[in-house]
Image (cartoon, rainbow, N blue to C red):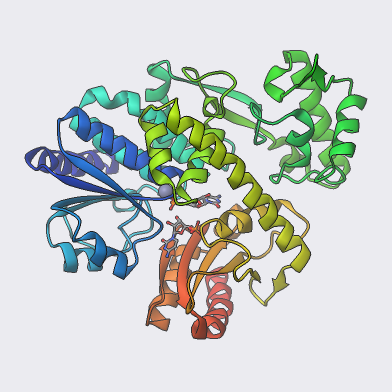
Length: 465
Ligand code: C5P
Ligand code: C5P
Ligand code: ZN
């Protein structure tokens, strides 16, 4: 049997066990992928007439698992759990299911579905919501409409970083296209095609940062006008989605030229164009229309302590929860902007094997990883080392977020393994893991110095192999 069949078998086994039970606590991660995963399994259980509640949490730390186990009878962990199998087995025995895509700890547990066990890479071939979607399909073929949420989740986890979704994600995308709910197009892959006025579309862009135009509305507006594109239509600011085909081409070529003239490689500049995913049933003026913007809206809810709003939007609410989510989106953008400004003002430090900044209380631990990832577009750091971000978690604990580039991963860097090993060597309250390209952990304050030393050693040895 090939990997795909074995994965299907595993999901069948889990689905048949879920059918036998009732009363579930769905435990999902707080980011876009986690919320999509939580909503997919919630919808699937709802359609089966099962009782369930959703519990969203920022991480499955050992004390979180102890709290959660008091909450109900059966537990379905989605978009995390593979790194905590020992703790889960110890605390919840056989009454739990794990559907995840993070690098797993070795485990023989039968109700555990993870792509790495079947030869698929959970870093780019399938997300947590994708894995949950595959299970939902085993519960009922009719759940195919939930594939759209799995596309949003995969994009939220940046699994399209090579220009388009690949691996099992591609199969899921095909399911979504067949439902008529999604359309893929080759287009400009800048954030805010639907929601940002053209000027801010350029000046706020962080991936990439446009030299000479970034954070400069006046220069960005001039750039657009010089290229013969009207900024306004009557008294309304135009967005990229308002442009006609000819204007879109002109605008895109001007941006590519600008990057090349400012020292970007042709390859990097052309990377500005890639696959985009349009949700055809959503209002053309809503951020939900674009998979990337949908995912950001969900992050705005989950990472701001209001996951129930994001879950309700995933479940279909386009009235109250949607309005609330739109407000949280503004707040989220403000926090990201302020975070980036803080890093620009305070700078990034350089160690032998990595860049780092320690934001203390100035950036929330929930979003410090997003900010770290955004720095790769800026002049603050090079592409040659990973970036490690520290933020205060509590009086004695520090949250760590690590991000890398595709090139570094190809050279052998594995951030998830790096943090998991470092934490287990440090012991105490240190816990963490993740993906090769993005990972996180927490450590105690007194461990920070030793942690950095470990990183220097381990990163060098990963990259030598
Ligand atoms: O926990 P989960 O798997 O859902 O989160 C993955 C995280 O990795 C996301 O925050 C995503 O933005 C980040 N990521 C990244 N760069 C990539 C791929 C993923 O920062 N190239
Ligand atoms: O929190 P952050 O966005 O930096 O997380 C990056 C990745 O690392 C996510 O996939 C997250 O699930 C994972 N992570 C983890 N253990 C932690 C913190 C984060 O596995 N303690
Ligand atoms: Zn995920």
